[in-house]
Structures are given as structure tokens and as C-alpha cells.
Image 1 (cartoon, rainbow, N blue to C red):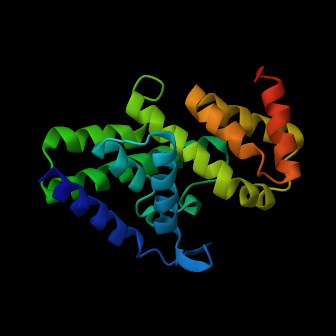
Image 2: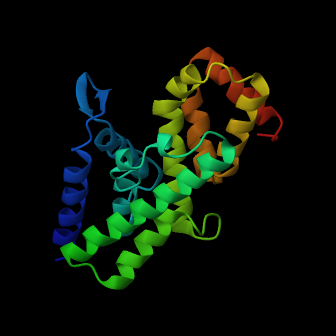
Length: 203
């Protein structure tokens, strides 16, 4: 029964994310962007935790569910507004995941648990939330760091070092080890930024 519930939820999340009109190339195929992102999240979840719980499988798949419905452009420019947007996205993703879980038959306690994980209200205190953050950071470093760097070429070196330090600070030692293994595949200019940031953290 539990397997059927999980399949119901993951299938519903995938159907929701496949509606995304934005596209991303994955393995030579064009996929809806947030659906592609959810697949990256699932792959990295299993890289970091070979036997993840159902709630983590759901949370990782729903990390960006329907994010295009709440674009960054709806909020003003600036760091404060950026974090307000991120928090609003987390609340929206948590609600949608909980709604889908309830529709598929999960008990209210599990729906609420996944919603808490996705809002990241208990980051650093809750192991499930922390694992989700590790997974998200790995996906960023592997798949989106290079494009993010290209899109923000006006940032100076110090700003990039701060971004990497903040990302690193949100990860666990397990995430750090995975990131260091991944670093060998980064372009040289991104590797230099990562090494510069970590040299000041003692890594």
C-alpha cells in the first residue's frame, strides 16, 4: 500500500512539473525545466542516501514544484526581496506537496512533515531538512553554478566567494565530501572560486 501511495505522489508531482513551458536540455533531450530539476534532485538524493525515506523522496521531487507560477520578477530587486521570494516559494512548494500527498491517501502527520521539510524552517536542526539542503546544493553546483556565474558576470570576486561560503555553510560534512569529489569536474574558473572560498573556511 505504501509503495502505491508513493507512486501516486511522485506521479502527480511529475505531471505538475511537466506543464512547465521552460525547457532544459538533459542528455540531448529537451525537458520541462522543473521536471528536469526534480530528476536531478532525485538522482542526488540517492547519491547521498542510498535508502531514502518516502518523505525525502517526495520532498526532493517537490523541491521546485510549479515554481514558474511564482517568478522572481514578482518581487523587487535586492537581497532582502530575494530571500522573501525564496521563503514564499518554499511555503508554496510545501503546501502543494502536502495537498498531493493528502489526495493520494497519506496521513495528515506525514503531509505536515513534508511541508515542514520543504519550508526549511528547521534547517540545521532536522536531519531530513538538512539532507534536502545537501541535495539541493549538489544539484546547484553540478547543473546550475556555471550558468548562474555566466548570468551574473558583473559580480566581483568577493561576492562570488560570499555566495560559495554561504552555500558551503548550509551543507553537512557528507555534502562537503560529495562537493569536493564533484569539484574535479568544474570548469577551471569555477574551481578557482570554490578553492578560494574554501581556503578561508579551512576545508
